[in-house]
Image (cartoon, rainbow, N blue to C red):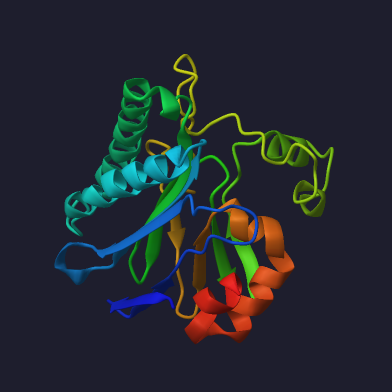
Length: 245
């Protein structure tokens, strides 16, 4: 059963499921209201690491990211709100790496994350790894985040199609995540905030009827984008359950 929240004319539903491959659920999701009920902050994280370390990592990430909600007041400039999300992500990275160093069984644990501060008119978002945000309008995808993965690079350089990404043998090979064991490589975050630019990829413009989907690769990697769009368009009120089932 999905959890639900309605605020500022936004209808939000979310859930996680262990799926049919793993014995434990390494995904975590958190949703909370923004100050003055101006919108919602949504965080999805997919943990990585054995001995339940992935669960620990994704929970650390969600807990830290959701704390940023209090800083996302509607009167703050959008650049400052983005900076607050970015600072929370970097701090989550620090916390995950510190926890991994304390416990040898959690060495190398990490997580992907996608987060969005959503109001009726915009979605301020960022991510690292291959957890995604999609924007659908009129039943068609008009935006998705770009994974920090080898197959995304192959796709963006024209070597494989987007459909081929989902079946590629190295589709799970990431070059950026929170934690992950390599302390010499800084976490890569997208989209970037472009100073002095009026239009920002990090801030999506929303219209009435637009649908946003934040998910881990456990969803889009199984269903594929066409099926995602179909299910969301047909089952708007109960999309979370339909997607997981």
